[in-house]
Image 1 (cartoon, one colour):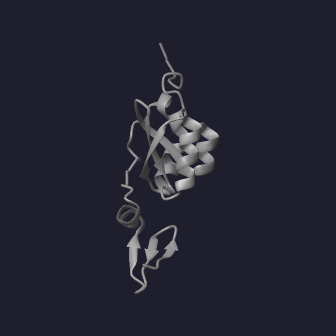
Image 2 (cartoon, one colour):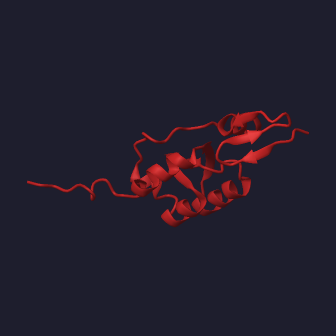
Image 3 (cartoon, rainbow, N blue to C red):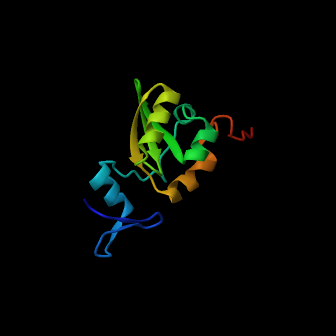
Length: 123
C-alpha cells in the first residue's frame, strides 16, 4: 500500500519526501482529469443546476451538461460522498474534473451572474 502525506495547497509527499503535484496524483490514483477553468465561458443555465450555496459550500461548479450527464469541476474531486450527493441533488450522473481552489475562487463570484441581465445598455 502506498503512503502519502497530503499538503492541500501543493499536493502530496510520497514516502521518500518527494512532492507530487496534486493534479498528477488525482489523475494517477483517482483517474480524475484536471481542468483549467480560469478562461472558461460558463453558461449560467448550466451553472445554476448546482445551487449557488451548494457550490460555495463544496467548492464545485457545473461546467457542461449532455442529456442526463453533468460535468462538474470540483476542488475535492476525490470525495466520492460529494459526487453521490451531487448526483442525488441534481438527479443526474456526475462526471468530476479536478479544478484548483485558485481557479474556483476566481470564477465563483461571476459564474452565477446572468450575463444578459448584467449588461448595462447605454443607448
